Length: 270
Image 1 (cartoon, rainbow, N blue to C red):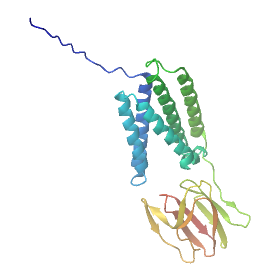
Image 2 (cartoon, rainbow, N blue to C red):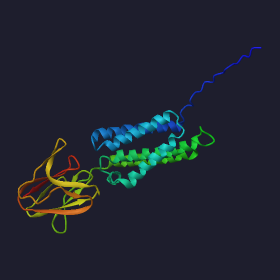
Image 3 (cartoon, rainbow, N blue to C red):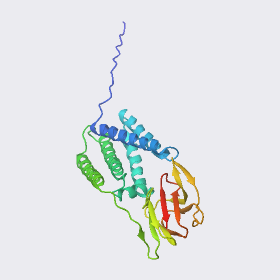
Image 4 (cartoon, rainbow, N blue to C red):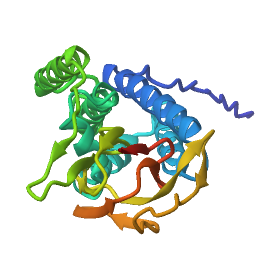
């Protein structure tokens, strides 16, 4: 008696991407490309962190496309840590978000909104992947995303419509001319003062700066201390204020921040 064995091969196909997975792939792609563009714009070594962010988002997109079940859990952890770092670990996002006239206000609002939407979407995907119904979107998801999208759109419209503030030099109680230090600019960028006047540098942004005499030229510093200029040798400031002067000799003085390319102040003493 011959035994006949029949082998049946069952073809397995991957399930289609869920709506949440598609949204995560879209957001991840936008964040990856945005971070990559920022990394290229800043260059080495300042853009290393943005390049790493771009790579992480690209990796998450690949995991979502491969339908890796635990990918939303990993993405939730990474996105949550990133949001905490943006809130408490670095002053840059807070500075941009509190200055409507800043050119990076709208992009930062969009980036934060996308990160929040991605975080909510990943939580929804976790609930979906490990819940009873792996195809049904959680009920709360639509309300949360709609609210976040509305806030982001409103913030972007406010930032776009905000007019640049006209910055004029103010005078301190002792007669010193006040120069505000922003994220990467002096406010104002040029002042004219009478001989015998001091400058009062105020760091409003809590961003580290390092000041000395010189100018920026094609991304490179050209350091030069004018004769009879008040001593200013790579003066570091990250908060508070300090006075420089008095400037006793008429002429033109150029002051720069060696940390931030293009950050330059012109002082004309009459």
